[in-house]
Image 1 (cartoon, helix red, strand yellow):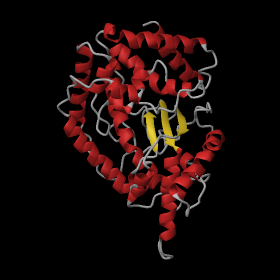
Image 2: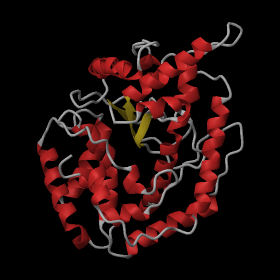
Image 3: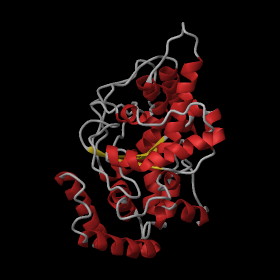
Length: 363
């Protein structure tokens, strides 16, 4: 999207990656969070839980064509033809649908969520071979900052509330569901046959946890900078989850010291925030390349304004980022002048977004 190059994957790939310092606790945190992710994954994939019929993903997969015997690529063509219908029916944001500000289907606890539906290219044959471990729903932002890293079930679990945003890669989700149905059809009559509600909690939600964890770490850095309190949810898993609080706090302090005490470009700042499953925050925050229309702009803006204002507030020298800041000021001014742009949101959310746009405009 014009003026938001810092979240453009191709732009980031062209930018040199030099002089980046890794925090001393990153490798330790990676080992522990990979252990936690694997424990969560094993817990749900080896048991037969189910979400409610009202779950948004469960409702969505009902609309996918079956065509279990068709070629993979023929099947994806049939799914592609239904993408426009699905975005309109569920009021998801797409390149031609503005969508709505949904209740928190994934992260619960009040707030609201933007659900984007679209397509990002992938190797379909490789995806089919590893469908049980592939992610079809990508987290663009979530508000949580806790170390319990609860599954995004949309329940009120005592966690921090705020704006959430996810991208559903519709062809991936459809292909994953089709492979699940094919597996169920191969089972003997004496085996337990699972349904769509089992599919969602067994494969879709656990495979989102890489993104959930990395956004949680980034949120800890941002919230510490602003003095926002850590929120301890009132739910926890029935199995052991490591909570490396000492190392995590040390990591956060070291990140903030590195990015606030030395003049850096915004890209360098993001690259100094090392993560677990993504290399760093620049990789985590890269947007899908098929969004840039007027219809999708409010959702994109809402999912990235918090990070933009954090970079502005935390940077040591604005002169290092003059080009970015000038572009953002032009961008924010256009959005502020477009009276109908942000009326997608409830009053509180719109007020918060407008405050951030004004801060950028006055920088």
